[in-house]
Image (tube, rainbow, N blue to C red; front, side):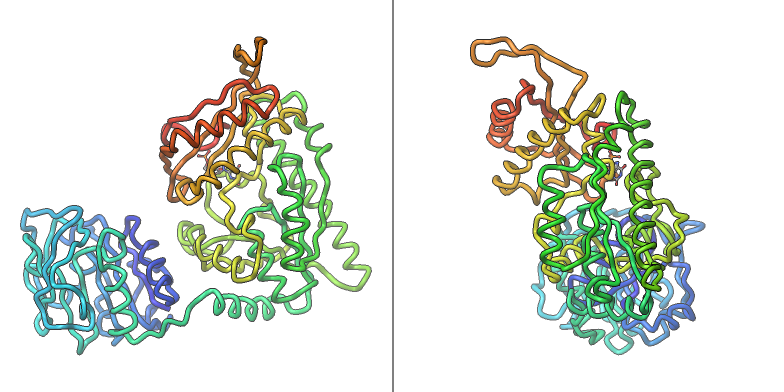
Length: 517
Ligand code: XMP
């Protein structure tokens, strides 16, 4: 792999993704990693990330100096560039001249492999207070800016490179090209990591892990479990059985998409648990959000375990045993929980609709090394239906936490219609790429007066909550075009009986959460 050394802040994950976009596999490691640990991972290249610190600060993060003499090509970015300068005998000084945002740089050096072929004047994105004032001996200075004499340096001989700007952000005009030059030209790493190679590698790994044992997987209808199950099926065929719990809180057409479209495209064996009645009975009379979540979580586990027990009996009758459970854990969860084993470190409520950690199965996690967009690409490569692969995030407790008030079959039906209209219109307007997700919420305990046709109505409001976000931790409300909002509003009030008003939620997160409950 290419190792991305994390000096803090949010840059390392972005760099890791950009390296992968150059078709090279990357992994994130902490800056405390030793040269011996690096060598043990046998990397083909190293990228040192930026970070929020100053190399002058008392406890600023450092790098084991031995890493720079392993003979592995290194690219330092921003803070990583300054750390390199300092360790290699150059100078870093606090010039008092900060650069932040779009910054013009001029390429000054001879064509090096790092910036070769790039225009001499270009715009980069900078964010730094300290500057490299003198390059280490034997290094060429490749670029400068108005306030930074050494904005990039290189030693082609030692295969050590650095840039002050952030090539990983889109605002750096030729940023991706810098990374590609480093990877492919300077370090000579082939561009051979792609969806196909990931699938092949995972299939081999899963076969080795699972052997002839049986495997189960819970499908939610979401992207992660669908892709994880499809890879496992590719590896072990009908040793895998998927369990899909229909709790009645799904959106329009979701059950059919899983049972028909997904099964048709993958050939997985699927068991659906029709638990609608069970969930409705358990939720009757409950309107407190936390209580709803607890009930939905509890009933989900009960349904899943019931189905798993039945499958275990069936397997036992044939002398087989279910030993493994597939989980769609993604790389950001692994990184954020310190790279350890086991389940993701996410807010506890986000586990609602998931499984408990003490299940007696060993985990199969084919997506542990992947980012979300890579999971989608793999799903497409495996031929999964676009309605599933392109799906926006949908919470485990489903529509149950989008009805403010008691959950009833009638209210679910009404919300399903409104939600389907909103989604169809957003898709038709080509806005799916701009929104992270758009919860549609029924305020079942609120009524307002309206007029429709000749009569007075007394109906419920529907709330549209379109948000833009990178990771759901923070979000902003999406500025949707008025004509699209108008169409959604018209259609919902005309087509969904019982709704006489559509309102728009214009709250960012924080202070509002994305969901209303
Ligand atoms: P909030 O409402 O906390 O939501 O801003 C952040 C993201 O998490 C999703 N979400 C959940 N996902 N189980 C889940 O699997 C849950 O209980 C749950 N609650 C919220 C929400 O849709 C958003 O993407």
